[in-house]
Structure formats: C-alpha cells, structure tokens
Image (tube, rainbow, N blue to C red):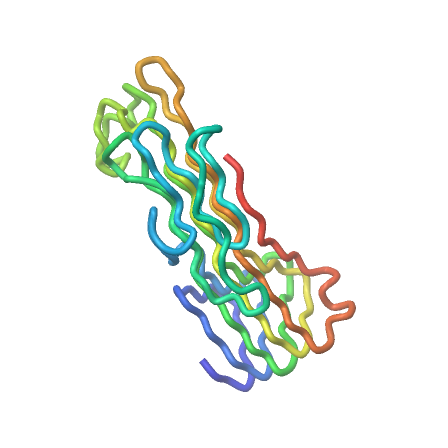
Length: 238
C-alpha cells in the first residue's frame, strides 16, 4: 500500500503488511496486526520440535525457543536478518490431536513500514504487532473439556493428548521512518507454551515457549522520540 498519509483507528490484519507513506498515524485502538499468520505447527525456519513422549518445544527466530525439560530440546536455532528482518515466525512443536501432543502455536507474520515523515503511535492502546501464538494446553483426563471434541478440537476423550504444544515464534517488524513518536507498542513476542495435562493421575510436560521475533527501527530523527515507545521482541515462558 502506498499513500501520502494514513490514519488507522481500527485493526489492519494480514500475513504480510507493507506500507509506504508520507505520514502514518495510529490512534485509539489502532493496530497493524500480524499475530499468528506465520508458519503453522512444526513448520518454517526455526520450527519447534514435537515428540510423542515429551511434547512440543517452542519455535526459534530472534531468540531460541524453549525446551521441554532437560531432555527434549529445541535444536533449530535463531535465524533471520537483524537490520532488515523479513522472516515469518516458525510454528511451535505439536501434533494436534494425535501422538499425545496438542497443537503447536503458529508463528508471527511480517510487517514493513516505510514512512518518510512521522510514524505516530498515539496512545498506549495502539500497536504494531507480529506475535507468535500460544501452544494448546494439555488435556486433563476425564474433564468435561477432554471428553467433548467440540471443545478440544477433536482430541481423544481419554485425554491421551497430555503434553502441551510449543509456542510459535515472533515474526518480523521492519520500520524505516523519519521519526517515531507516541506511547504505543511495537511487538514481536513468542507465544507461551501450552500447559501440562493430567493423565492417569500424573501431570506431564507443558510445551516450550516461543522465541521472540525481530524488530528493527531505522529512524532519521529518533534521538528522543523512541524513549516512550515500548519495543517488545521478547520470548515467552511456559
């Protein structure tokens, strides 16, 4: 999208957002949202790993995805460009409704904003976000949720799907602007790992958290304008 000036008061959502503008302003609940349209579970660069006896690790991108205990570790490491990030977040480790492991969270999308003038995030509720999604929680045996396929996504009523899915990795936010102002958030966080389920009286493993994505802000006049911004490329925990 190429425009002279653009004001966003609602939510603009897409897997890949690319805007070129003279001025871009987010107001009220304005958001550029690429949460979760990256790679699906166990797919993409830095994908999480799943094993029927352990569960799902978190996916990696700017940082490592989380392990499951000390034995089932994430071996797919960080990737992507630091200065010009364009990669989608990888999907957290998971199987869905088979082999004991719940669905892994999908990764974040990618956003590129080129603004010759001011990029303004006017208000604390505004955000530019490419976050990974959480892995699904492990089921609890004999719970109402576990026994109802309409609620649990089709998993077995026995709650054999007892391991949490891994969290998806954060995606990419690449900003080139004359100035960046305001108190809104710029996010590329990893999704949390799904919680541990309970099967045959035993609490098993939760999924690993997704690694944070990458945020790069290239600004011609940002000596003080970024002081109130909230840059959140953090990884998640389980």
